[in-house]
Image (cartoon, rainbow over all chains, first blue to last red; front, side):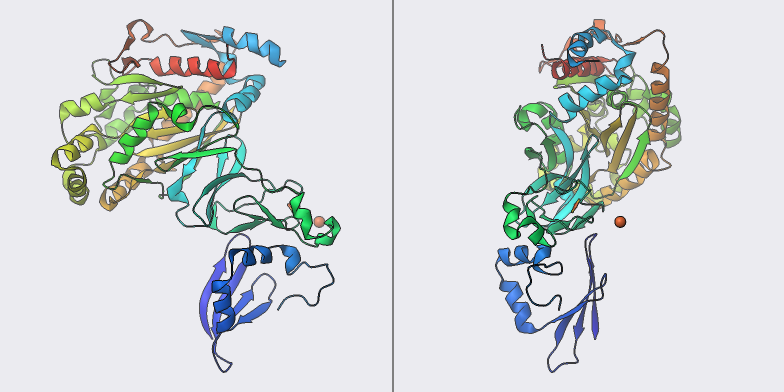
Length: 77
Length: 421
Ligand code: FES
Ligand SMILES: [Fe+2]
């Protein structure tokens, strides 16, 4: 696993590394404040690169991710 | 004291040749200054070079108000109040950072760096995500404008434009920028904060008071071998000039032109900064490049809070009637790495934590604040040079290098804001 570094601001701290345990490399993101981990593969990353601006803005709504209470399935990665 | 009482009273406390000591100590006066000056006129907030990248932000202030200066992803500049629209927590804590959005640490309300509310945790309690439409985002300064990278904000929706506010002081910013071979100033050297127990006007008045340097700063002038101190004398051709709008300057350039030495104003001989001198002549041509380097950097107080003192820049922040913070940085010029290194070293000596120039002034501010609290003789004298003031070829009022022309003009402008006729 290649450590890329820590991306941090006063609002969040995420360790970014390259994971090579799968059959192709993946990006490993670890939220250092909670320990939660998510992997992103090449196609997912490409989709983020090309996502419209509104996509990330919507995702920044806390009720869309970790702090949901609309009864939708699952939480976190 | 009620507003009506204060109104009639203020004009009696500001006379052409003196001001009443209570103007520095009266909490009612201070409260009105916040409303009529700090939260109405254009106040300097920060510089675009402090937020060079999309989504950069820095924490700044407009008097006691905490604000965040942001550059959004499109490059536009915003000045936001640092106050969560939920229950009023401070949203940003770090002095600087890069983030497209800010999340309040109290309950997680999240805002774009334009101020827009992006969302909040567990939104069912508000009836779902659409509640964003009715809830507010971060407050924003209604007017934000910049001049040559210097960002000013006004908390009043209407009033004079920034250019009208700056008036002739804009030319002093031009003069400063011309000292860069790329025509740009960069405020990237970092900030030192000095807090003094003194009213903010003590500082504003002192910045272009040419009467005190020979006394208060004689030690740093003698240790550094600087010839600047001697220019603050009535024998000097330097002048104190009221630029209008409460702005004023000590213009030492006639002396620098008389001496005719490129960079003579800076205390750094050209031989020590050959790359800079060459770049200046390459940009502006040999003759104009020399003129700019001879003429020097401005010493200008832009009312109410931006003081450009040749090689350093101060931002004045009142936090209480008798408490003021000075934020100071070394000016850096784009395309001038050799000069910039020397400017930082010089500023460490003058205004750094152990610097000698600001420490001298700070001592005087605090003594002055304690002094004006004494009961007699009530008034501060402002008459120095009143009888020998003249109008220069551009129509500005000027006095000698040691005259109190700038203070009288500041107070006249102060009255137009505090008690419009
Ligand atoms: S005060 Fe900011 S989220 Fe509650
Ligand atoms: Fe608690």
